[in-house]
Image (cartoon, rainbow, N blue to C red; front, top):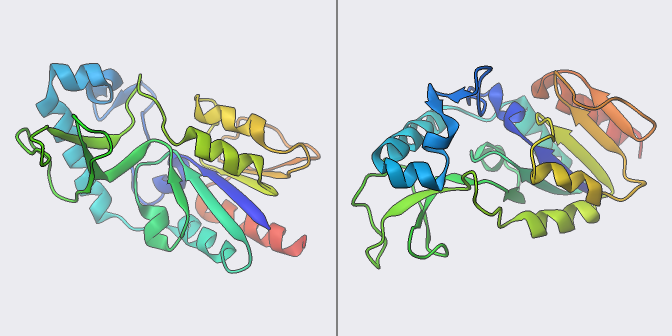
Length: 226
């Protein structure tokens, strides 16, 4: 079976990765636009680089949780593609083989002069760290106002999905939210989130719980329905 999995911040929250923003709209006490926009980077690059250095350090200290691990078991019997809005590498570390990062990857950096120059990066990134052509390096993360280059590929995967699993995301933020409209009409949807934004129906199966407990239940249901 061809299974496509859409994941958001909720799948990594139980590993200790802080979700994108808290209830007051701030991210680590910063206005989002200060640390996640081209304008913020142009205005105060040191602040932005420091912000992502802290995120990178935190990521290297956490581990995949039961939800990440459960998804790897699906690959034993099915063709699985994970499309994630997360910039962490926890899916890969858990063993998932095909992971599409819509919003970039925290453990990579790219040249500000050539977007195709992308480097693996696990240490701190500072002003003066440049590519071979002497352009400043920046986090390989999609900021507000920037294009999401992997959307076309993600759309194609969803359009071919025989089963769709959504984990830890409201699917209310575009362009990622638009992926749902490309799913075939007869494709069953499994939705795992403690505060689900959609209701159960004949086609949609909602698991209103955390990813670490909900995902194994979804997988069990899929396997038992074969």
